[in-house]
Image (tube, helix red, strand yellow):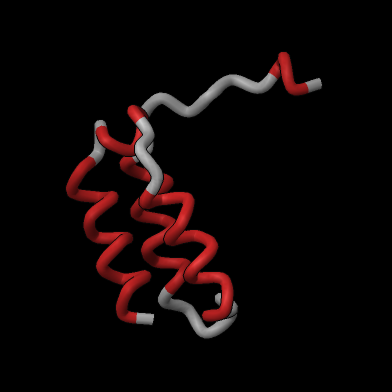
Length: 63
């Protein structure tokens, strides 16, 4: 049930992990615009980690 899922409060680690994953050969580059759309949207949790978010956005724009 969705009610049992707790939101992740600190996104630094997950954002760094995503940054690593998108640079790997197994990541489908065609998915970059989709991920970019989600990461670019205003979000309080993402805005709390500006450096990690910026790094991921830079990587996604390079793909």
